Length: 174
Image (cartoon, rainbow, N blue to C red; front, side, top):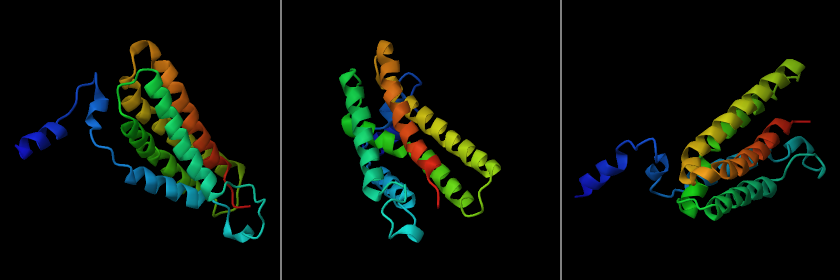
């Protein structure tokens, strides 16, 4: 009986309803990704005594990620989406992984003296992370919406990942 339920859970899902594969709600991964991003984006230690270093504080990044994902989820539910609140927050949180990878790449690039070429590399890495995160969340959450309201549900996801990507590309060590 338990094996039968497990095999039903791991079977591939049809293309018409990929979001049904998100049966469990695991918020630990999104919490770790958000915490990692907030720690990396926090102001640098070199200017710890200067409160106006221009970078976001830990709590600001944390609030942007969690309140932003809640707003996107609430929008999805109000548009008639048939995915639960915590499933949506879970998917949005796990879709932060490409943006987190872009943040790590950008942070490594920031270790050397900055040039225009390196900024372009950082920009491309951030845009790849942004596109990947937006596409991944659209695959899961876009199909949970009624056909006529899909664009209304996707636009806040686009803005959510755009703001986070903006934090990534605008982060500097100076």
